[in-house]
Image (tube, rainbow, N blue to C red; front, side):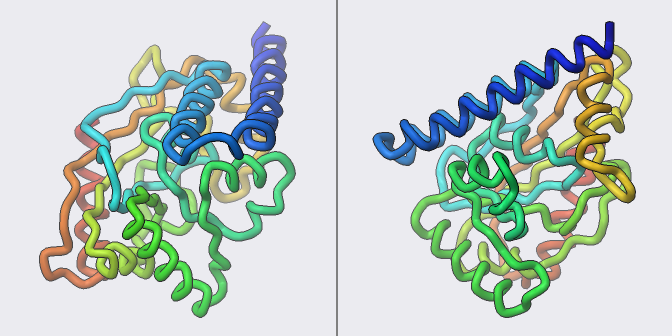
Length: 246
């Protein structure tokens, strides 16, 4: 029965992905940026529901930009969960743009792409992020640079925090975690770390007991004279506190 239900959820999710692609291709050209953001958020919420993932939001996300959201990174699901809680423009590695299906969805959602191995491109991305925030966007990054299991956060890379300093924009710390709906204990099913494959992570998520994705928004904060490294360290501590309080 679990196998059949997992396949059913997968097929419903796949159909939802195709419908999302059709919306981007056929509807987005006629929509305003605000309407596009609303469609992306609604689509993400529906996807989570189709896969049996419940969303729990604590705290208050920023209402308007300019702002930078900084979150810990656990799974490929994180972007969907964040979009469901509050639409934002993510910074992602450039090869995602060329992924089948996913690339079109990510681009349609306003993703900014970076070549992570290039220092020159990192400098360009800081400039692009700052410009986007000055134009009123809410941008989001995962400063760990890769995924962890959520129980221990990796050190934060500070480079992209410089964009908030350049734009004089506040940063909002956000913690993400997945818990078993029945026990309230952390769920490792959606994790995508180490030797995990995307297919394996997806299958564990589909076949696991009901999961709750918990998004805990902290208070937006200004740099207050901190450089990017000091600010990144403080944000990491804040996110650990938000995670433990959720």
